Length: 180
Image (cartoon, rainbow, N blue to C red; front, top):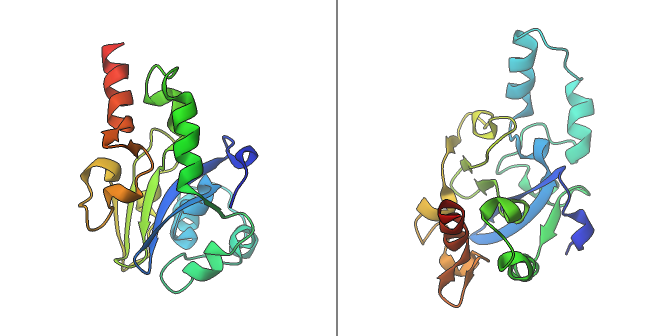
């Protein structure tokens, strides 16, 4: 599991569903681009300079296309950290009372839901590359508020660290921001 110093701006949190298990993983934002071939081609077509694919893939265990066939290599890569949801809950609770809105603790919340079981990617974030555009051919990519809209059987409430004693702290922070 990861220590607090890994929670820095270059890294973002994602929910990973693999073999029916929900995990929280922290990694560089670029690592959540599932199909680097697709992203690289788009950049080249637009006339931007691009790195050699092999050089790009080195940062995530040589995986250029992250899918159900390469997930284990990726999850075991040095730059992909498993985060204990208890640590996330504790970190949120420590900051909750002083937070004016969700924005004050946004770094604690996942920006993507990567479902390797159902070949589905959902992104929900305010900036950066449109991650959901770069999914493998047989995957569904969407921009969606997965934390609030995915069904219980896909993303159970029990796996959401921000639900504490029946209270949805994420919803409370969103409402606090609207009222403030």
